[in-house]
Amino acid sequence: KRVLRKAGRKAYYVRELSHVNQAVSCIQAGNQFAPIFEVSSVTGQGLDMLRRFIKELTIRYSKTPSIKLAQGIDNEEEKANDADSEFKGSEYYLDDVYLVQGVGVVLGGAVRKGRFMVNDRLLVGPDRSGFYRLVLLKSIHRQCVPSQSVYEGQHGTFAVKSLGKNKEQLKRNQFRKGMVVVREKDMKLLKSNTVREFQAEIKVLHHSTTINPGYSPVVHLGVVRQAAVILSIKDKNGNECTARTGSEVIVRFRFVHAAEFLSLGRNLIFREGRAKGCGKITELYPSGQQLFQT
Image (cartoon, helix red, strand yellow):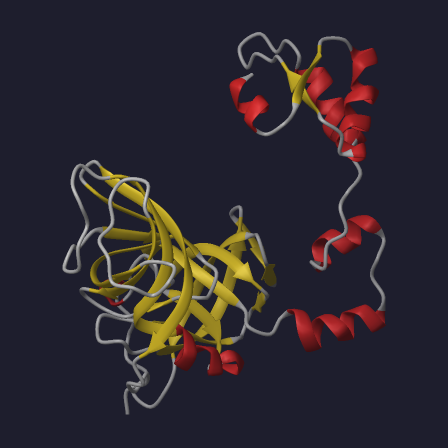
């Protein structure tokens, strides 16, 4: 109840099948009532009402072709628009790396933007030296089933092989969690988004003393996790200051070990022991270094 009160909502308990339609109306109308289902995964109590509620909800419009098929919205003109606009800037973030006998290196993760298809030429990185590696997408699996493509919001695994002049055999230790995969067509993104330093507006949720330049917490940006040193701290007026619990300041970070692929507006969390805070990226500082080995 306390959480609902903070969100300005009131609880609407669904205890009978006859209440389901009213619960659906609450969601579609966007009013102040929030449907609550009391269910048990042991006895199955209430699951029939929850299933019916989900079934009655209308599907929101999506640009993702797999959702369009379910909505009956799929024509040649929209396909062309998708190919031209939606899939520009495709991004896939690595969660895991596997070495499968007879297959080779397999990358596991989720598509944050766009679409990837079998036989796409991909760039994976940055590695510890800040370089990207050119690979070929041999096959895609989603939920252990072969697939020809994977779209925004979907998880999947990519079997890849090396391309380029050397065509060396890929090894598992050449990849790490937090790397990004982009199509070779979108390589322009890499120069502006591969950074060692960035600026963020943060709020310090808890710290026992004060935070000064030189402080080095661990920064979490989705699957990216790396220690970053604070170079400067400024208030909203641009004046140098220190930060303490409850402070809202503008901080410039520098990754300690390697560059990462970031984007403006991305949420972050930083922590060190019991100290923690959150914020949003407001500016990137590309290093201008070479991103591809010659």
